[in-house]
Amino acid sequence: MRRRRAAGGGGARAGAPLGGAPDPNPSVGRPAGRGAGSAGPGPLPAPSPALRSPALALDQAPDVFVLRVLLEETGEMFQVAHCHSDMTVRELKEELELVVGVPLDLQRLQYLDQGVLMDDTTLKFHDVVPGGIISLCIWHYDGWTELILAAVEGDPSKLSCLAVDEDSVYQTANSKHLGGERRKEWICQRAFVALYITSHRGHPDAVQYLLEHGADCLQRTPMGRTALHAAGAMGRLDCINLLLNHGASVTDKDARGETPMSIARRMNRRHSERRMFLFYWMTKSGTTDPKKLLANQVSHRVKGGFGSKKGPI
Image (cartoon, rainbow, N blue to C red; front, side, top):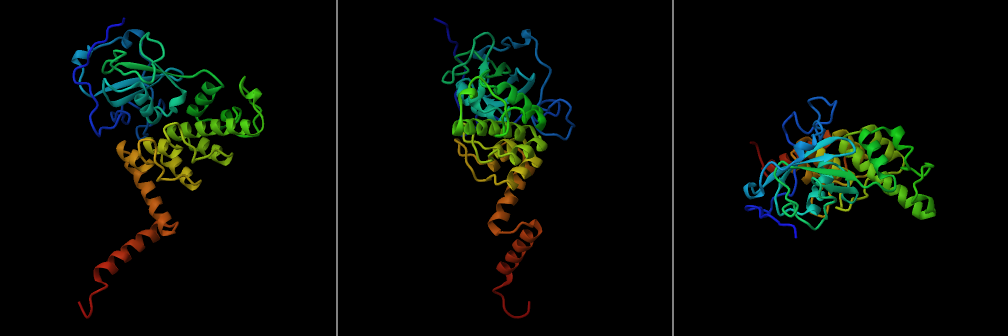
């Protein structure tokens, strides 16, 4: 039987988030080719096999640490904060929905040469060390790899050829046996996954194309997250505006009870949080003009402060 090594104080901390935003260091967590002002994840140079070996024994591991995740199909490297040795693979996948932007049911995680990591096992069980590199692969069935690569690139012309709308003639071995409503559901799911990823990566042209061709901005991942959760997590203001204008909800909660606004706050995307907060109050007040909303608030405060006073001041 394989020996398991104990981690020193690796238990979960109450109230602490399971994952985190990409490293704020400007040299880490930015897509290749983006400027210094861009927010979001991005590739570091792909590591050599030697760099994937454990660097720190688990009995010396800190309670909370950072892991690196390599998306094998694109070569992008991401960082996941607030990991701990008793964290399950499922919990890691839940956070990767936000950090990497791939729904957890399409994720396949591997560490070193251990094969696919099972959801109910822990990082400690697999001897995952702080700073270690987890490989994330896309499940190679039903054309998901091609679709996700096109969504990461954000090219509407490529997405249009991959069954994200009902006019597409694209087929997989599975979809050939689908007809009627079942095929519509299959296309709807593909369109949503493409919308989720393009919103996460900040491709407004692709988001616009998908929304105009029927992608549902209220559809959810297995974690209950919408495309607005993904855009809010990464601070993609252009995509947030598009999603809000097509009916996305700022109050939808995921399986952890987080709204797009609270996720933006947790990941320190202040401008995104403010944009969604402003949209929320504009909707409640029935106005589409932010200046009118501000004027109404000022007027309300003035009346509340001085309305009861009589006579000259």
